[in-house]
Length: 164
Ligand code: FEO
Image (cartoon, rainbow, N blue to C red; front, side):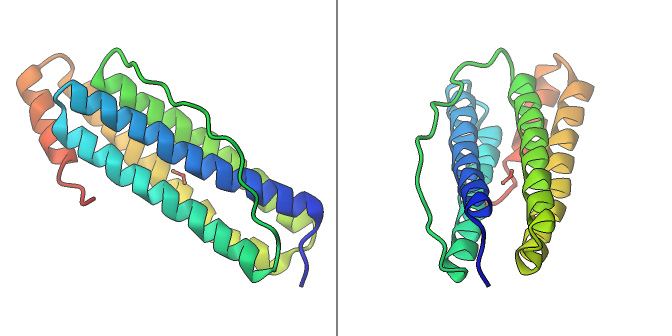
């Protein structure tokens, strides 16, 4: 089974997007650490690690087809946020963008009749449902507590229960 040059290029772009996501989340973690939201910083560091795992999953898929993996530049992530809520809203917007990219990748695999790869990419389709849901819940929690700093620190502590 061989992948087309267009499919290989799209897969490599997705690898870059996943690694860029890891950097975006590390930027959010750094902002949270500087703002003393230690739990959220831990949450974002865990998310960053997950993104590297996503990239490596795609990397392994390409290797299985004997297709070349190519590296590209990773843009610097945003460093400044106006609030903790803004970081999680950023995460949700980012995940929606990644979901759209995965859907296009899946559609390309289907249109190219790369059936086995399409099956492999289904893991990413369902993963994105979870990724969006988790970010959406975090945004919802922060909206509920609003400017109540005590409640916000409690939510931050809860976010920190996510394992790294
Ligand atoms: Fe790898 Fe959060 O998408």
